[in-house]
Amino acid sequence: MADFRQIPGIDTLRQRGGVRGLEGRHGVEATTNALRAAAARVRSSLAAGEPVTNAADAIETLASDALASQSRGSLRPVINATGVVIHTNLGRAPLADAAIERIAAIARGYSNLEYDLDTGARGSRHVHAESLITAITGAEAAVVVNNNAAAIMLILSALASGREVVISRGELVEIGGGFRVPDVMRQSGAVLREVGTTNRTRITDYTASVSPATAMVLRVHPSNFRIEGFTERPSLADLTGAARAMNVPIVEDLGSGCLTADLAEEPSVQASIDAGVDLVCFSGDKLLGGPQCGIIAGRTALVDRLRTHPLMRALRTDKITFAVLEATLLEYAAGRAATTIPIQRMLHATADEIEARVQSLAESLAASGWRVAMMSGSSAVGGGSAPGLALPTVLLALSRDGESADATEQRLRSLDPPVIARIEHDRVVLDLRTVLPEQDARLARLLGAGQ
Picture 1 (cartoon, rainbow, N blue to C red):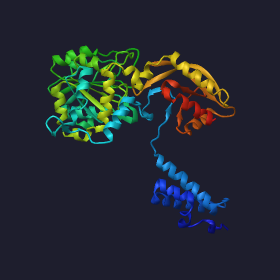
Picture 2: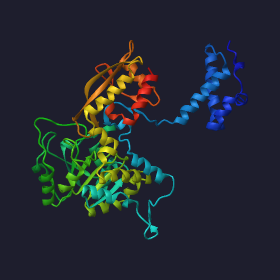
Picture 3: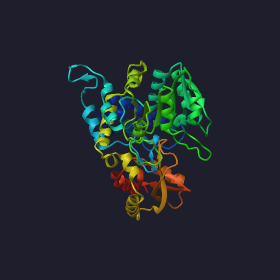
Picture 4: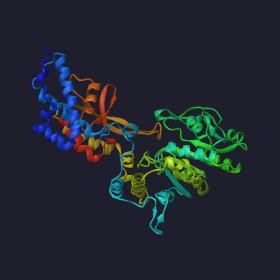
């Protein structure tokens, strides 16, 4: 029969030096709760006939581990070695150093979020970042909301509720997480008016569908898929010209937020504005490389209607988002984004540059028990951007005698910080394109210690 007398009381446990240290770090209430939960686990082990050498030590260890896990939080930094640059599951864009510094400057005190420093009266948060957005994109005006799904919801609600929105069937896409364009449109109160076919939509399909009930023509980035073969899609210039001739606004959901013209097949925001799009919306934490937000840019008359819509308050962003966005946009305005914004650095890294880093890592692991091999491969842009575009890279394959690829991948995820890799052809591979260069030395130490 189990001897439960060896389990000390909570007050007795609190007298132990180690437990007093836990109370100092985590607080009395949290520590007491952890001790009770740990004591219950030890009691269950004894009841099951499992050997417990020292109940007090076991309880303290269990409580300490639980408190450490709790204080660490569920959101943790990881090393992204998958080669997917915009990895939604891993938080999308890592921020530039300038953005991190700006967060610290704004977050540690008060700011003029809604205060006009010139007049000493209440101001508007919507002025922040607008001048930078318009200067970079060429748009007349801009407003920022909390993500791009919110941006399209606001546009449809403010400009098309109860009226028709004309859109190609080939653009009724579903993005990550099961969010579908038709569902968003229904929630906004807009009436979906599909035109064309999945693979072919012509200008005449649009013009034949426009009526007095039409609020706008909507063009949507195809996100993470492509249709190839027998296809047709009007150019943006042709579409904007036709919409203007019919006096119907054209709105484009670009999604990825590309502000450069050097990424193959990925349209830029500037090109859409130049083509005559009335409103364009895009994400801040994809190719732009900034915070999660939705940016809407275009004609002043339409942007002003969005600012004053009742839904705007529910979708507005906070001071931290504005701080990060402005700092990120300043890097573009200064012409140095390709070297200072992590997402842009990763996209512009050459296979030769990555190979040199992989070679150094492979050499550091030569005597660590890992079997390593360098191999050619490709990285992905990710985040629904540039679907189908493969970026040449060099991979480091890792393996251990007697250990499966799944077991090795799990081993890497158990490190602190976790290393997230991918499996190709039953081999675990690391792609350093998405590992920040300043993480290389730490990655080598982690792999050396975790072998």
